[in-house]
Image (cartoon, rainbow, N blue to C red; front, side):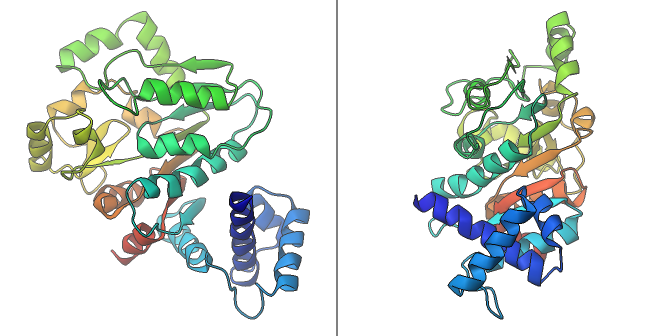
Length: 315
């Protein structure tokens, strides 16, 4: 019940801010928030009657709504969702931003569409945010290969997304996340099974993914996806983090490093052509890679926390 009340208050805050500060109509607000115009009208009325809305917007999410508008304008997004930064961060940060990302995708995805999904702790929390409803003819595809000895293996996450969406099909990338050489990658990718997988993965209607940093606490390092030596050589090559299985520099370009040619993920440029890309990521360690991704306009929707948003806007 508490989660439902908090969700309603977030909706009220966003509706009020968009109505009074950005001069959007109730219909425009409903389209932005994924609710009906009547729902927006009721939210605004409820806010007035309860005293939450007066001359100012007196809710804990006021700062977040302000940051959302600034992120949209700064990086040319169609939508930004900013959650309050948990006091102690860590696992709580994954939940704070993962759940609203899952909720957004579950409301934006239409029957008959396909969703490509990333991996990691934030993505696992996004599964818990998926709204419960009757989905029809949904297809789920993993965008990453497998990870050995990981509690958040892409295979598991993809299957969990498929179950929550009652998916018609669930497509796994039946290969490691990275292989030993570009030649091995080309050999595996050249097989009919993989060619078909890659073709279908590049046709998804929506993508939900995260990003990875290159600090000593990076998930890719902690879970054994890359070694400490590889991390050091990637940094020397100018990499600031990972996106879609490719390591990028501070301008958002893939760095010249052998590991990028060993990624089993679908074609990087092809993935960027997806019509609806949702990035969910936060934390100060990821500021460099997030700034690179957002600065290049790679994504359409960004879900993060307030501290990360403020620091990105201050750069």
